[in-house]
Length: 195
Image 1 (cartoon, rainbow, N blue to C red):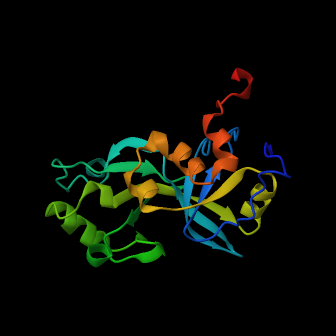
Image 2 (tube, one colour):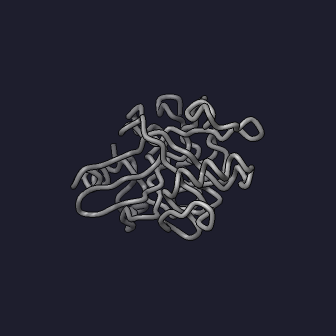
């Protein structure tokens, strides 16, 4: 469903590594309703990213029971429906974890051994890490097709949105970064019949 007036608020921004995919307000896909996906890969062969605003009830201690994370139990987020048994790291600690620079000060991946050491030594701030089970993936041509249908808006990733914004505020926060022409979307109800 393309709810945007093509003459007034059409975006001229394409998905890219380091961008945010922001679900349009009425996207009814259970995995992506009001989701904000941080894209870590985007190219001709497909796209990969992590949903920033779907925390689970799990902590890292639930997944890696041998770790003592009782001081600050790290929350685990649902990164997406693909390979939900894999653990992924998005962080701003390259000097300790390594990883690949994706956007300004935001890294993906790194050493799991280093992650365990950092946690055991309490040598981290909770706001510097996001851990995800699974990821969101699109095969070649799939995301451009969804963009054409109006399912996603594209925004800029910021450290504040990725690491510091409470999950229930991420979608509105991402919408608000798009500018005044899109501000009305932030207050749209999930069910348009309630409007």
